[in-house]
Image (cartoon, rainbow over all chains, first blue to last red; front, top):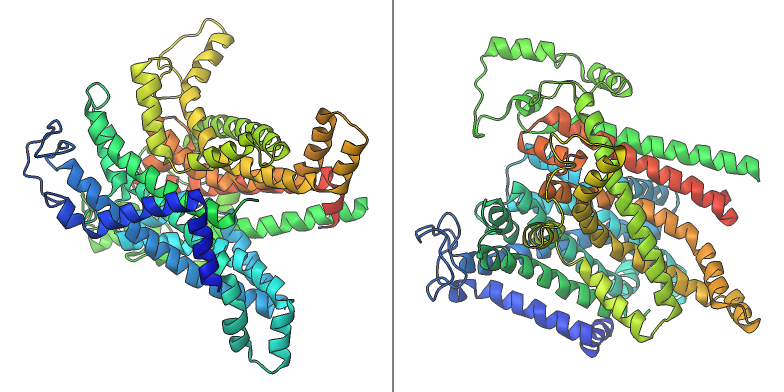
Length: 275
Length: 331
């Protein structure tokens, strides 16, 4: 019943429908990347700095990569990171939040104090410190983003768990002899679906922006073509702004990031509804 | 009441002090738990671009020099004492004390981030209040879609576009640095204008980056306030719109101040990107450069200083909130 109400919310509002359509577009792009892209994303055999042509729809970059191919494959990286980060944040955050809120007392206070501390730390400098010690790998990026992201989700699900704990049906289940785990699974988790959906949307936005941002700062995984890396090389190229190259080198990856994030923003708006 | 207020301020302060202590601890243990040990992080790894080969004797001397052979708790206490004296050691890359570098960079970032925070909050309050006033009307619905959508543009891409449009095509603003190099100014005003024109584009980017948060917050808080009986009563008494807005705004201020401070840690991230794109000589660019050079002492000290600034601002916001809203004084 809850699942259907989320789906209904999404499809009934124009924002939700547009957001889902854009997201579907990028998912298809990621799944069918080898069919859409004419070259291998690591292929550097083309002549560098060509203008767009039939052979290279968005031209080539300074090392002879086909920009269109890199942009198409970039959707895979963004979506993989979004999926991995949002599911791990959801799992850790919901587990900690529900446990903390349901148990209450001293454990809850200690946990939430810890969450507050996490929330206060400026995360990008910390990410850079961690990354400076680690190898540039997409899984390290996922690990760091999940590590620093779960407290937000824990706060949300804890608040919800506490208000549900006081609700009649949960009390009734407990008084009837349901064990803690049973009550949480049967009566608290299902009511958390809307909060969980919001978490997935928010964390996907954060993950996509952070992944491309870190790639832009030079933390990209060389084996995963990323939109952020493409932008980094585009604006790093000395005469990018004096020629027309910005139109096919800088604009497409930037537009892709913006559109993909926008799709999640729109989905998030339709989930929250009209306040 | 006042006694309780003082007590609350002190206990809040202790909580922030604890938070800062934990950040210091993380900062201390990170290089020590990372694979390869602390020395590796100072002199680079064997499989980096420039592998450093150190023989055992040199390694031992270096370990001695950095007191890395001491017991961990002695190292930790010394680290805390050094930090308390603002002694962050020497930069590997610049070969000057880290503190000197940070002292030169921090004012630029405070100027940039402070202006961004003030302007975006003021804009957010203005737009949020107007939006909640016209709840459900065309303006509100348009703002509610447009402003949150602004955050889908990655801030470094936004910066690149700004450089292209306003710097290269229109040529209105300088696109890099904090002021014109080697310039001599005829008056302090000329200098202020130069600094302001260099700051214009990065500032605009940060405002766009930040505005969604403060707008949505103010709108939500004001919408809640508008439903309160005192607003209905004010309307019934025929108060002018302006004075009703004044009342609503006053009652909404406490959470706004709190949340604006809470967004600061998020703004630090934006500043790193923006200062990098515009080569603005602040802490963000310093963090990026020291990351690229693997200048660990600078990177870690910059993290400590930025965390301290964020915590201090949050603490200040808590105190201000308690002051302007008597109800929260008990915490």
